[in-house]
Structure formats: structure tokens, C-alpha cells
Amino acid sequence: MTDTLTWTSDEMMTVASARALADATTCFVGIGLPSTAANLARRTRNPDLVLIYESGTIGAKPDVLPLSIGDGELADTADAVVAVPEIFNYWLQAGRCDVGFLGAAQVDRFANINTTVIPREGQPDLRLPGAGGAPEIAAHAGKVLVTVRHSPRVFVDALPFVTSVGFGTGAGDRERLGLRGAGPTEVITDLGVMAPDPRTRELTLVEVHPGVSVEQVREATGWPLRVADEVATTEPPTDNELGVLRDLQARTKEAHSARS
Amino acid sequence: MAEITSLHEAVAGLVHDGDIVSLEGFTHLIPTLAGHEIVRQQRRDLTLVRMTPDLVYDQMIGMGVARKLVFSWGGNPGVGSLHRFRDAVENSWPVPLEVDEHSHAGMANRYVAGASNLPFAVLRGYQGSGLAGRSDTISTVTCPFTGEELAAVAAINPDVAVIHAQRADRAGNVQLWGILGVQKEAVLAAKRVLVTVEEIVDALDPVPGAIVLPSWVVTAVAPVPGGAHPSYAAGYTTRDNAFYTAWDTISRDRDTFARWMDEHVVEPAGAHR
Image (tube, rainbow over all chains, first blue to last red; front, side, top):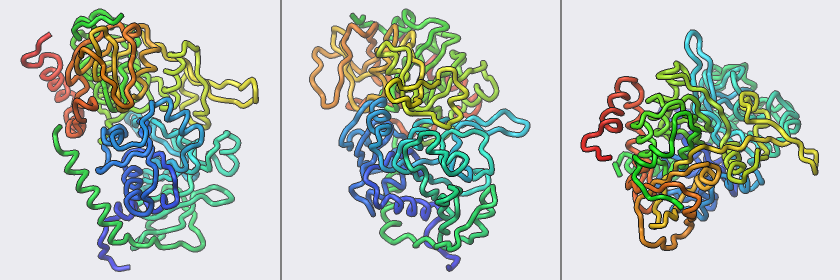
């Protein structure tokens, strides 16, 4: 690849995440990177994608990216708005969400997620926001996508706390725990894509983004990362994908800087 | 029947030191100004309950009203950390803060159990999560029909629930619409209920998706226009996203925070109460 890409690594990550939703029917969307990707998917590969936010908005079609899971536009554009106990019990727990899309603070080799607490040397433990909807999204969604920027501080050898379960300690753990969904199928970062090994469930590098080397991904991962026999290179973002994403982000920036 | 009164009188009568108090509102309809009144009246040792403690709880915790927080997600939505909440948990400033931490599904079901007058709720949840081992309000129960092991969460029954709604009629019937969160459940689970509203009207005209809380499940209604700011009340105000971003800077430093609270909450210019 040339060293002058016309897109940023964050844009590549978002585009790759949106493509992962090409065949989804319903997506339970976390805020932040997952929400950006899900809204891009709805505007590119999958116009019929039903976006479900934990605020109870089902089928939201926001014109700009929401800052929170309960922005007014999500409710105004939704097919249905239900109460919070209902969204978790009738829609998520009952198995009505194909894909759950999560961010993370830390991820381990079995795609377990920590969003609760990180111990620090000589300082009080770093307090993170906590679980939110993630433990049950990770449990009940038909499958789970995770998107997060790649760094050794994020992809750690051992999690200090498991907030949401991916594959636990490996093959068979989800079944033992009674988790009904298939669990994480892809972890999409700004460097590439990892997928669980079909036998061991350990995350394996299957794809690098254009201009990224396997070595770079290894260095940004806090455990000896397994690499697939054949590592694909992600298709570069199309002009349309980049154009739609940049428009969306520009509109969002304008909308959120305005005082009500 | 609900009494229609001022915010000052309602908080003075309903919220006591040491109470379990739940200010609910899921991003939408957050009763921020009621929280400010609790700060002004210097309540102490509260157990604050809320699924998503955001700016209003950051402010209340930073002012030292709480000794315990029961919650499921404590951040500044789309912005980052709640610095006052973190300072309380990490450094016990200004006072130590005990936490009882759940997932959203767990918290929502705890309110459902409370509203249903049941001791606990059942769900599929927490399997494999470290949360289960850290809370004495999360356990398991075996289904008597299938033998399946399920999560059990203890009911929440606050002493006081506080919510913000779009409007009430003169009899104190309360109408709210848009994103409804867990407000109905929090109200029906609580012993006493304070509702702040955008306005008091002669008649509650139907609105798509609206629910009505009958006057007789509400203790007090106080008209507080704009009472959800920087959150919003659909049909009346919009979410002040810029303020959520600004709060990150205001709250990061203890002195800046204290000054801001003093100027805008404790002794605001032209305050009338």
C-alpha cells in the first residue's frame, strides 16, 4: 500500500464495522463507535437495519449521531418507544435482537470485556462507568460485534474484572454459563479484525486494514496474538462510504455544538 | 391525592436525611432541578438510586449528600467520566461513597419487583459477570418448573421517587411521553413520590405514546419549567448537548466544581424560593 491513505484509521474502523452489519436485521446499539458504525450501515449497506437503543427506541432513524442513547431524535424517528424494563425483557432477553454492538475499555483474548474498574499502581483503582446494558447484550444478542481502538492497554493479557462475557475461559464456557447468543464473532479495531478461533474461541487476527502490518497489530496487543494462516487485507473504504460518514459526522458536530 | 406545591416545600416535606431516594429519568426527563433543591436543603447520608447517574448525581455526590449509590452506568453520556463520582469512589471526596452496582437489565427488574410488591425479580442475567459476586442484591433462583438456574435481584423500594414529567392537571394526575425509562416503575415502587412538571394544565389532552400516573399514586406535584435541564422534556425543551460537554471541564477540578455549584445551585443570582 502507499503511505498516503486518503482516510484515517478511525474511518477505516467505522467502515469495517458498518460492513459487518450488512446482513443484520436488528442491531442493539451501544453509544459511541458502535452507534456511528450502525448509523453508517443504515445509510450504506443496509438501509433496512433496525436500530435499537437501550433507551427503548426501536427502529430509530436519526439524521445526526446521538450524543446519548436517549437523544430526542431517537424517539422522534423510532417505529416504537418502549419503557426500559420492556426493552431488556421482551426485546433483548427474549432473543429479538440479531446483533449486539459493543464498545469496551479492556478486552482479553476470549473477547471478555471490562468496563468496570482498572487497578493502578500506587493510585486508587480507576473507576469506569460500569456495565450499563452490556452484560445482557453480550449474553442474549444473536451475535456480538465489538469495536475499540487497538492498544496494549485495551487488549490485555488478563482482565482485572469481567463485566461482560465473551467466551469466558474458552470453548464450551458460554454453553456452561447458559448464554444463549453465539457471542462475539468479530472484534473490529483501527488496525484490523480479529475473530474467535472456531475450536478454541481465542481471538485470532484474520484481517489487517490497508497499510497495517501483522507485526503492528501484534505489538498493539497485550498477549501473544494468534494470527490466521491467511490474513486478508480489508477492502479500502469506498468514496461513498467515506462521503456518507464524513457528512454524518459534520452534521453531528454542528448539531451538538449548538446550545438549545 | 397529590398536593400541588412548590419544589422547596415538596423536598422539605418528602426527602429526609438517610432516605433511599431515586431520581429517575433515562437521559430524557431527568429531574435535575429537584436534585439541586435537595443539595440546597443540605440533605445528608442519602442512598441515591438511579440506573444512569449522570450530571445531577455527579453534582449531588460532589456536594456530599450521598453515602451510597445504587446504579448500573455512571458516566457523562457521549462525553466521558463523571469526575465527582470518580473522586468520591476513588478518593472518598468529599465523603466516602459505597456502591451497589448492577447491569441495566438487573436494575430495571429490581424496580419492576418493587412496583409489583414482590421481594425479588427473576431474569436471565449476570452469568459469568464479576458483578454478581460483588453485590448482596444479586443471587440465583432455580425455576420450579424447568429446573433452570436464573438470576434473582432484590426489589428496590425507595423511600422517595422523584421524576420530571411534561405536565399535570389541577387534580395532580401526571402525564409524560417520549422516552419513558423506568419512571413508572420507580414511582410505583416508592413510598413517597415527587413529580416536577413543565406546566399545570386544565386538561391532559391525549398525546401519542403518553402514560398517565393517577394523582393518588403521587404525593406532591411541583411546577418546575425547564426542570430537566440539561436533559430535556420532549415537546417542551431540547437536550443541551453542549452543557454535557462543558460539564467535563467544570467538574474535573474540585474548586471549579464547588464555585460552579455555589454560583448556579446554592446561591444563584435572583434565586426565588
